[in-house]
Amino acid sequence: LAMTIFSKSVAIIFHPVFTAIYSYIIYFNIQNIYNQMLFLAAPKIYWALLFFLFLMVVFFPLVTIYIMYRNKTISSMSIPIRKERLPVLILISIYYLMTYYIFRYWNSTLLNLFHPYLSFLFAGLVLIFTLTAITYFWKISLHSSSISALCGGMMAETLVAQPVTSQDQVFYINMALLVLVGIVCFSRLYLKAHTVSQTIAGIVLGFSLAFSLVFFQIYI
Image (tube, rainbow, N blue to C red; front, side, top):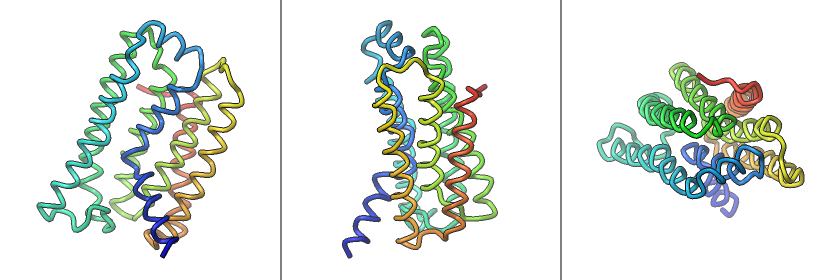
């Protein structure tokens, strides 16, 4: 019983909709040259951006999922049925696309100081599109792909957004994220929400895609 409660709690806390929020908090609290210049130029921007991000990638998607549940478009808030995930993923893709576009615009107005983080947002957008396409045919683990993307993306961020003031901070962040990947994936398997192959596929896709796009600073 205790393990079930723990696994369900992990699934809620590290629900895919929170991934962008966690990435924002982690990245913008790393003392690198980009963040130091950004907060020097716009000291109050941190909370404004965080609030906007919360609205676009957490609040609106969760409200949308709740409305779909109330209208019986989906059978459960956890969306366990593969086909029911498709309309949800498409709507979340739209929210994320709008978020990315606005961050991209702000980046151009703030001397490209969002440059390293923008590639992470773009990786998230590509990941959502890819997961939507895969979900049309197969049920891949959204939890494992999102937490692995967070881990891979933040690891790459710490490599490209240099110099960093504290290498110890970077080390502990990366170690904590690796542990979280294991915990989240274990919880999905324990709850029998996914098979081993669905979970591993999510890990490989999320980590490799996010790490690659961020490391090579790819975005459009």
